[in-house]
Image 1 (cartoon, helix red, strand yellow):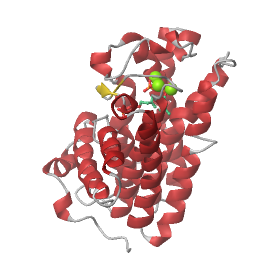
Image 2 (image 1 turned 90 degrees about the vertical axis):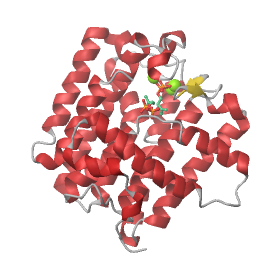
Image 3 (image 1 turned 90 degrees about the horizontal axis):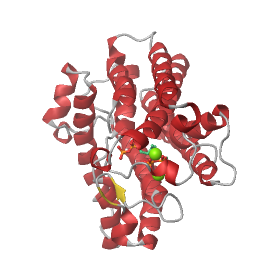
Amino acid sequence: MKPTQANADSMTADSRDLAESADAVSLLSAWGETLNGHFRRILGRYPSAPSRLMEAVEYSLLAGGKRLRPALVLESWVCCAGGDRDKPSLAVLAAAAALELIHTFSLVHDDLPAMDDDDLRRGRPTNHKVFGEATAILAGDAMVTMAFETIAQDAPANLIGPLVRELAHATGPAGMIGGQIIDMDSAHPPSELGALQTLHRMKTGALLTASCRLGAIAAGASEISLASLDRFGRHCGLAFQIVDDLLDQTSTPQQLGKATKKDAAKGKVTYPMLIGMEASVAEAERSLTTALESLNSFGPEADGLRALAKFVVERKK
Ligand code: IPE
Ligand code: IPE
Ligand code: MG
Ligand code: MG
Ligand code: MG
């Protein structure tokens, strides 16, 4: 398929409002609407798939969630392509949807009894609580394949290889999945900050960095721009998991839509546990400063990314 622009009818009024606002909450909600429309189209591509499997996929995929990663993909594209927010290309929409499919798969599996054994996610009972473990495992598997299929189907031929390679690398053994297995190794928890940083960069940072890189790749960005967005994504990614660790201690299930105070109960080593709350907040802020510095070569086209980075550190859920 050629690199066409998405149909105007796929855009919501909200997405048109994006042009006037770089406020993170508006960006997340408007891009979230655009993404949900795209997910409905993707879900409609499997008419012969078993309905229970598709129900389980839809249950977790359309359950809400902040949609931070797809917003980063789309804003990285805006930043690098000078792209019109009313007309995201099919390639960037596919990349944004693929990232959120992989992220949602990682949450469904992260919550399984064999992993973090959680009952609440995105304000609802976890997938395995509703559909059973076997279906939750298979729904996660299905989301992985759907992620790569949407890129293969919707991106132009010259972008399929680079987008797939990027997403697969960030998801796989040297990225999120590698980080998750380190996180599961309760016999050898990270004992110093360097090791914890490596874990955070892998289990969470890899997909956040990939979000920025995919948007840049979909925009045909230069190597220099790609390197700036890579640096931005790495620092946002670390800040994101530090804040996740902090919120686990300070927030409530009502606020977060997932259980809290569970890291200590499960013997997980976290930033606040290792260096204390105050130092963790300072680390998150230091990462934010470096992330913002990475965007110094860009002008107002990066304002959406700047707003999202601040949201990562200031967020309350
Ligand atoms: C939660 O991610 C899992 C982590 C990587 C810490 P989010 O906090 O982005 O979850 P949703 O997508 O908003 O539900
Ligand atoms: C999960 O980290 C990272 C993933 C790859 C899903 P956590 O286990 O801390 O995420 P939450 O707190 O359950 O969302
Ligand atoms: Mg976990
Ligand atoms: Mg967890
Ligand atoms: Mg957590």
